[in-house]
Image: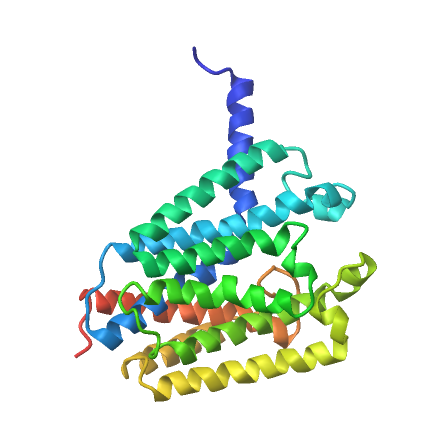
Length: 307
């Protein structure tokens, strides 16, 4: 029996809502380059060749990040229903998807992500499973790590940066001695972003009674921590360059990418909100990271020679 026009429209709206629920625009721009760079650093260090496992683990991480954002919206849906502004961003709060439907999809996403991580080997599975577990604990009561000072930052930098990078790296190198500085660098960069987000939401979160690191230490100290995180990011990336983690020719790709992104006028942060300099650096930095990662990938696959 053919579905009616109304049923087809309903199915289409739900599929569109699931895409919105995944919030892929917010995490794919950093997830993909982190996995690629992690794997490419290992290949550069060991001399092995890339294989199909990289595709599996990249897709696994995208699904894991989608799970993290979806779980957050499922848990927050009852509260978001009371706020017209927040409800506009939450398809469950809008009534387009039910919590039951969303939970069913969450289970499928977790299973598929775990299977794809397993196809990458034990190392990737361990780091990937850690990401999935943290993503759940980050939002779901009674643990709800995002509402616990200090732990909120630590869990954020692990599941949204370091573990992603390492899941790609261990595909081709079980030892982590060549990647530790880079892993710390991306973790501090993630901390910078999280401190920025907490400052942006400081007033709203305080009124809602949320307890996080920014509210614990105050706005002024959070700005200091954000600046320190940015500084430590540069120090760690500098150490990684000094260690020879990246091929020498990549510096020209980096400089070219910086020139390209500097042509454009950046006025928004990663969430699309107007921002000052501390937030507007997010999008161009991610664009540079993507350019570097994909050029490096093309070269590593032998599609473009470097000499």
